[in-house]
Length: 183
Image (spheres, one colour):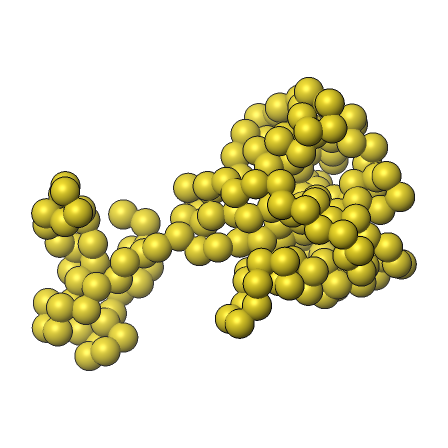
């Protein structure tokens, strides 16, 4: 069960127990508190992603925590009180120092492995790239040179490429993915 890392009730500190019950027309497995009946719903987390375009090229960045040379879209979590558009513009500025001049929604995709829903935008940006400490390096790619993986932001990037008349090339993620593979 996803979300099993949530072990104790935030209301009374009792250990949560997995319970399978009839709910919404079928059997559902949930973590519930046996003392106060609090439920951990384990809803997906909304994540924002940007296909950052600078002078006709797509900026892909490598997370500083990654040991491999995979480059990915700029992503981040939406904060309370902001719209998805405000959130992705903020993330782009925080992570790359770029200013988003124009945003357009690419799509919404599931990323089941991480229990996330990814909301992806195409962002035309300008400015001088200065990476946050979260990112180790970046590369600019011609759209036709980008390869996509088959989940999450890779699906969003593939949709964007198709919208530009480019049939995306998909790759499986090896242990050391190629530098032009987007996640």
